[in-house]
Every structure is written in structure tokens, then in C-alpha cells.
Length: 101
Image 1 (tube, rainbow, N blue to C red):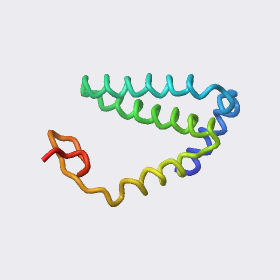
Image 2: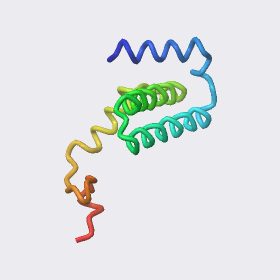
Image 3: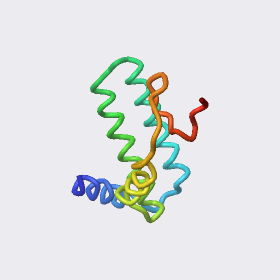
Image 4: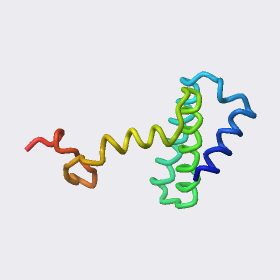
């Protein structure tokens, strides 16, 4: 995984994306997320696999543009959720603090 991330970062540098405007990159993230939604709606596993990969690529570049890396962002998010409690409601995990019981 580390090698793939490094390859994406190098590709980004080669294309000049590493110094591009982050807000524009985020629009690419949203575009790719939309493709994931379309793949789910069509039950298209190949398009889903590609879409998830594209989301990760765009997020790697977004992190890079902000002097961060994917590992740092993922570690931060995991540290926040690792002790989280909650339950599944209608197929979605809802953290305890958001449950209305």
C-alpha cells in the first residue's frame, strides 16, 4: 500500500496537481464519490471497485496538497473512532452520542 500511495503522489507531482488548488481537488473527490453512488445503484461491482479506487486517489492528492499524507489522516480518524460505541440503525452505524433513546 505504501508503494501505491507513493506512486500516486509521484503521479500527482508529475502532473502538477500537488500544488493545485485544494478546493478544485475536492470537487474531484465529490465527482468520484458520485460515481461510487452510481455503481452501487446499478449493482456494478467493477465500477464500484474503480470508483472506490478513484476516491482514494483523489483523497491522497488532497492530503498531499495540504502537506498531509493518507496515513496521517487515517490514523487521526481511527484514533477518533477506535473506542466509539453505538449501534446499527437501519443499516448505518450511529455513535452513542447521536442516539436518541
